[in-house]
Length: 328
Image (cartoon, rainbow, N blue to C red; front, side, top):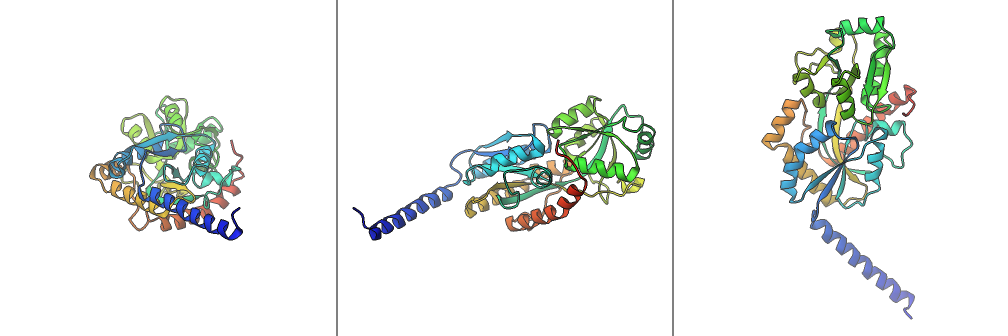
């Protein structure tokens, strides 16, 4: 029989052995493919970003980057999936303003969005803008507001989930302009963009980079940018401030997170890979063409991302909750 003293010594030795194995695994990271979850159906802005940084990160890390779309409930299903994953650096999430901040203000989620994830890096910041189908009679924002007032509740306006950036933007637009329209909720941006191009949806306040190619191809109209200044990617489009609609300035950000407890050296390696991928000439050129802004090195540090994430949550949760939105 092992004495209590000997048993304690044995457990201590075993703890060191297990720690050593875990430390060695972290040091050898990555030794197999990495899955990055996009908490939305295919076709949204997350797909574009993942595709652009995935190739250089794959080359830098020496392992495949597998993209997995898990949509639904404004990103909370995919986010919950990653929160439950092993904290070993092999399951990450490409979170955004909706999935990694706004949705938790409305949905009952099985995780704490601030506590249960380790920030890796902020990746991009872009704009929201109001776009419409080609068949709309209004040629600019002033005519659009007049048409909406003359046709209350006739227009359909897309939103990626209740409480999303597109939804908050639409609510704000209604309130400021005194217009009324019907919201149509989608599981992700991709299906909404398809309906907009197909003429089944009238308007949408959406993330700019994902819909900029549609404007350039002449498939949609753009009425205004929800920002203080014009967007360098589409300088011909006025700000909503310019047409008399004070804007609700929502910085649409995307970043990379890992489950809580992921080793610091794994986080550091991933942060370095993201930073090096972002300075790849082909990546930075494509980001510029899509109107995506890359945060500075300092803004991309994990501790800075944690502070930014907290400040965004503290700013927007009261606004989202005050809108009395019911989850779809």
